[in-house]
Length: 142
Image (cartoon, rainbow, N blue to C red; front, side, top):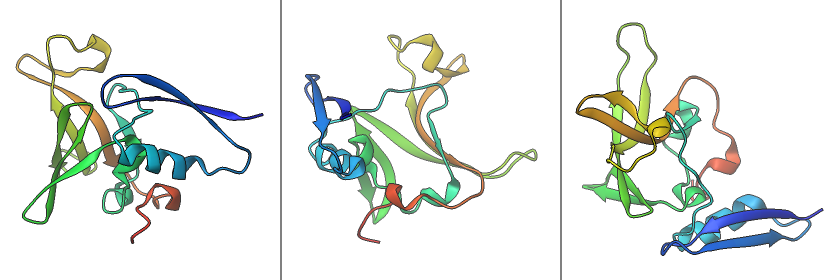
């Protein structure tokens, strides 16, 4: 059985790729992601990964590009939107969370929107909790 992956190109064209037996899914995601293709669908509170992944995560897996300022990752861009890095330090007994989110827009589906009033946002990824980062999610240059 061949694995099929559905991508969307940077201009919104849907494309389906069929992987050959033995072909590395993560390598295909990296190659297509480098060109801005994405197979990711937003979900409420974003994709959850261990906090350890934040330093090494390969954003190409999502089709995102890193926005750096002064050598610091400030945001990631994907699908024409920029998701800002927000480091939510431990507070009120809650664990530390680093999330990449953007302000909610009028057209965003309600199930994706967090917060209320004027403090509404959509999260792409959140890094939270203990545990190691699976090596296949890390950049290969590390």
